[in-house]
Length: 152
Image (cartoon, rainbow, N blue to C red):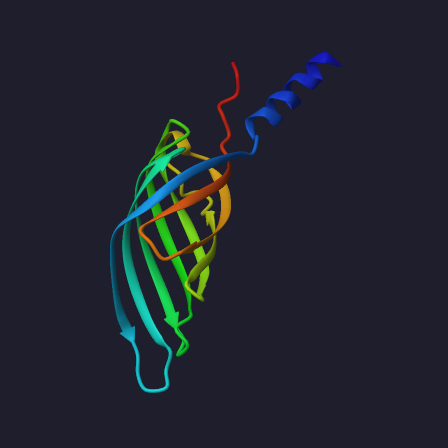
């Protein structure tokens, strides 16, 4: 009975949910329209460079596609590659982001795309949500799981 329980305990430990608390600073934001016209919502593409500090340390590049309404609100989708360290482990991962900007606040949800993590972060899974206003530096929280190598 004891030997049957050991692998189960090890498996549980390998997939514990953790939380990374970080901050990101926007280093550059280059946004250009790619489709607009009279009585049409404006479509833009934005390329953003960010740096992360805290439990996530590194740099990222995001590509957002946005649709602006006449009232100034916008819906956006994006892909962000983060390269650096998460909880001291080196590698990279890609976030899929979706959100809405209205009343001066961007509300979004994001998740790590399965199979996108590299290096010591291989197998990383996670997600989060945020609501941030204007500014160049913001909090970032990622709820994640990282499978650890089984004990030998």
